[in-house]
Image (cartoon, rainbow, N blue to C red; front, top):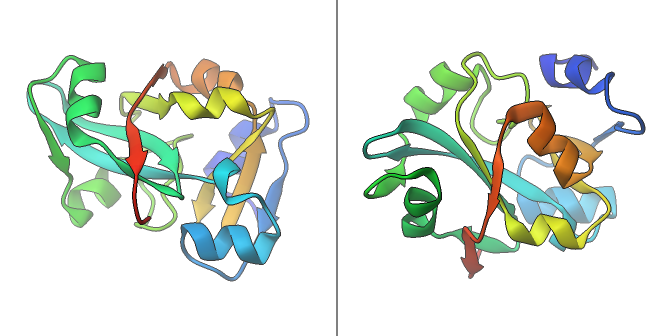
Length: 154
């Protein structure tokens, strides 16, 4: 299946989508036979002084909202409303990709991504994941690495 994300990824060598019927994080990793530590979720946050932004964190952890705000130069952050997230990105919650968004949002990727040759992120549809190097994700989005994940339930 072709999404705006998969079309962008045609420019990155070796980035292929993997499909799963699962909609979210750990279940998607399990169904795709992937190490859950390499599967990352894209969350849309509302950062005071910045506006909407995306944070990419492992599905095995939780987002540290204060750390996201700090990384993006804001005062504090909260999870964005579902409708606002979908309207800004052009994707439905559970399938939000950090790539090829309707409106390119500031992006911060958890620094744990550097531990892996490739990480898996949503390709713009629930259950469709793509693999790419964290550095390639930053090049394509203008994003930054920061410690924005904390341990906890996904």
